[in-house]
Length: 131
Image (tube, rainbow, N blue to C red; front, side):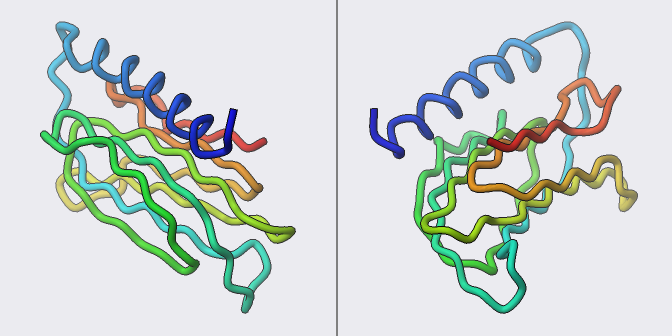
């Protein structure tokens, strides 16, 4: 399986889980999300692939390639994303969730492949995994 296919498969699976949680009896509040991707080695530009899903913001799965530094902002009930770095230098990914002008969640991780997301029910900080 190619790197891009693996990336898409992981995010689609995460998105399916988000859809189930959003449809539950709990009514979560919209969250303002900031996703920031930087190089794991300061001063080094890193090319990376990304797949990001915001739910339910009526946005399709976003897949793209970019270079660090990169930022994306969106308002949604939940988000899930996966990033994979090209080459020997990894990336650092930060996910910040704000509600009512106050920081609700913040997760940061560094690696060559990073998966981030936010707990729809708001009972725990977001999740983040590297591999």
